[in-house]
Length: 464
Image (cartoon, rainbow, N blue to C red; front, side):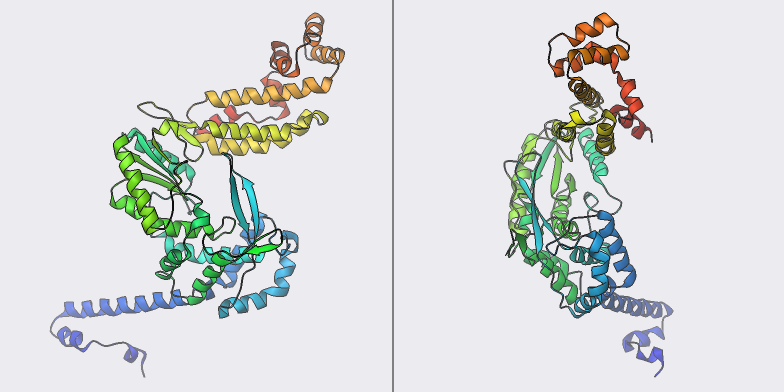
């Protein structure tokens, strides 16, 4: 039989085509649509084959190795991972293609939140992280097209800075009240059945659906004991961010349907309205929507309807000006101070250059994220505080008043002033902030040692 004989024929369309050329074109379009639909269905039903394709797996392996994450419950780290795959991958791949692969439990890790409390992470084995990453790479393009323009978290080509600029724009347009919603333990409370129902609308390969369900239900190991899971998608695996966006897209569509201006970054959602009364209504109605439709709970203690400049979003806040400016939230400043203090603990036994070398990556990375700040005062004060702390290390290292006097003279102070400063009987913190130490060790001294200046870095990044 010829290839064209196997095509489905609509006799009514062909009959009408003899009388009108336009109908023939319509019939060909119908056939093309049917063929395209079949091709899509075939592709969807063969997703696991795409997941296990060599190029996709190679990219997934590279990303897992580059992330240099901790080992899972099997204890296999990055150094042993390649040899492990050489021995076991053929068997694992065969099980994946047969729909029979069972993931291992995730390793429970509790980390402290900056605002108090703990966040539970579930660390999969490196093998399971690679499989999850391979799944993510195949599934992300399928779901990405349906995501909202107001969703910024964990998406290609989208980031927190874009969300912050949008938030600033909404406030500048007159929406000077924010409905700041915090979902209570979102990643721990995701309803598996709801999530799987949404996945099944786009995924036709039962093997992929079963594999995702197994990852959702994989036990969590702590202290050698594995606890089963019936809800949640624990943070720590490459698949969790995508799954969270898939579930919360329904929230995005509801907000869009109501005509709201909002920014969502993962489970952090801010809705911008024009009055306190409107904000209270939105908070109440969206709280009900989340509970009824997505089975999620709003954390009342951490959520609020307030002015944007008294709330924070993604580490930033806004000023109360008519044309608002982005500024660094006070909690973000305190968090950096805590990191600096951790580095400087026990610094008395180390050279200043060694301490600065350890400090610089933290300062550089922090400023790269907060480069959108349009107020420089807080950054200037942080710079001064860090130099104050480093001068304090020097003062403590010198120990004896005579040694302090000698070092101050080496840095250009007169003998009289050096000895008066060294023997003033004030404490290290007072002296390290006093004029004699500022004169002996100005900003230029720390610049020569290579200390990253937050203010200089911010100015440079903003000019790029």
